[in-house]
Amino acid sequence: MSSSAPSQTAPGVALSMASTSTEGFPDWRAVHAALMCSDPQYKSAQVQALQWMPEPEGGINVEPISAPGRPERPALVAPRELKSRGLGSAAGRAALIHAVAHIEFNAVNLALDAIYRFRDMPAAYYRDWHGVALDEARHFQMLATRLSELGHAYGDFPAHNGLWEAACKTADSCLARMALVPRVLEARGLDVTPAMIERLERVGDHATIAILRVILREEVAHVAIGTRWFRHCCARADVDPDQTFLMLVNTHSPGAIRRPFNTEARDIAGFTATEQQGLERIADAAAAVR
Image (cartoon, rainbow, N blue to C red; front, side, top):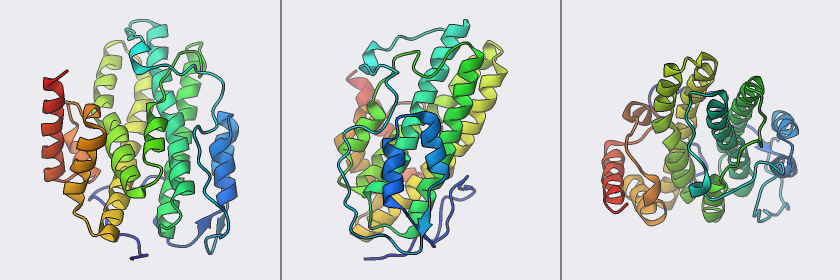
């Protein structure tokens, strides 16, 4: 079993706040405390304050987590119950910003869970996902500030729980987690954010556009981190990454794959031509039966 970090990432990808250092392991108790914290501001502070140790600390069991810490609001509903709103009004734009803020808040918890849950990874893995958690917390804060400018706050609109449900489904496999969360659900953000920006340009919401451009740029790096560690897990399991990825998507998440694809961003994030062609086939097959 290899204990070394992969030696390469997708070309041209800066790993954002994430570090490729191979020194230091997280304080598992502190990671768990941050994961279970329900206050977004305090959760961000705990992510910032996370301490590192030269060697992994033993004797601390991984606890099952049915739900991470989150505030009482927003109300969580089925995706089909969420209303589509136009962007011509401040309320419509606030609803869109709230939806993205909810994704970013969930992404903080997902990054923390990736650190906490999988204990047999190289030190660089934990540094990478801590960097992702820092970025996602900053994204959430930017969006929360923008919501406040529009007279709203996080929790004012309902949201769904799809991202965390995916974490529960992949809790027993780092390989599956890296395939199905960053490389499917989070990669979807690469595809849909350019269209959001275009719609906001039509209504002149340049403040929100500036935030989404930061998020889009940094999310490419986050998906690349998912690619990096997915391939590491595949090498450790001695399985073909392209075939394994498409098998997992076909088995667990075919309905999450939809056109259009941001192929430029996906290329930078490390998707191979074989993977992308397979995703296009899955998207077309799913669309045919909708």
